[in-house]
Amino acid sequence: MAQNIYDDPEFQAGYRRLARSEQGLAGAPEWPTVRRLLPDLSGRDVVDLGCGYGAFARWAAEQHAAVVDAFDVSEQMLRRAAELTEPGKVIRYARADLDTLQLPSASYDVAYSALVLHYLTDLPRFVGMVHAALRPGGGFVFTCEHPVYTAPTVAAWIEHDGRRAWPLDRYGVEGERVRDWLAPGVRKQHRILATLLNALLDAGFTIRRVEESVPSEEQITADPTLAEERDRPMFLMVAADR
Image (cartoon, rainbow, N blue to C red; front, top):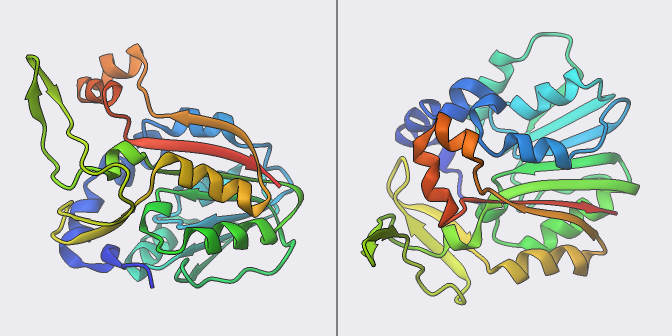
């Protein structure tokens, strides 16, 4: 079972204060890139795997998706998502552990997953399940923490040649990494880039686009803290077709 750190009171309190929690998609610097990866959702059946507070699910409904099924393991996240969603939306929220979730075959046109894969213990099972749940021609768009971000075990910069640098730790050794982020003992799965992409290919997907969260000059001007992402991108974004 995936760790449900999001129902930890300390973690949840910190998570609520993040810009992406308070502002939704507008508070996620990677969203403009992710949006370009998404197909037209009008009239499509969409599944949101790891919906969090439901920001993407609500956006998909605004894009006239026919149905949006949104799953998350956290009761706290789902409760907040329901609070933020107006009645009558085409969104169906449900609690599920994505490490064990089974979706009906050929039931969706678009699958979306944001910042979830690095928590899952069985990536091939999950990707194969998503592939089977999509109809022919369907698309899968996901974001996850970049492998150069999950490799460090100590969240600290070091000085190197007069510059701040982010130390990689055992990049080629895959497996669980435990870090303190918003709360102690957050467990994440480190996988190298090849493992992430090959899981898609092995499941039968065609990779359409791969992006990394390298900020633009405009983004850095608006938020100077993003400058460090040029040395160590935080997110990987992938679009794949069935």
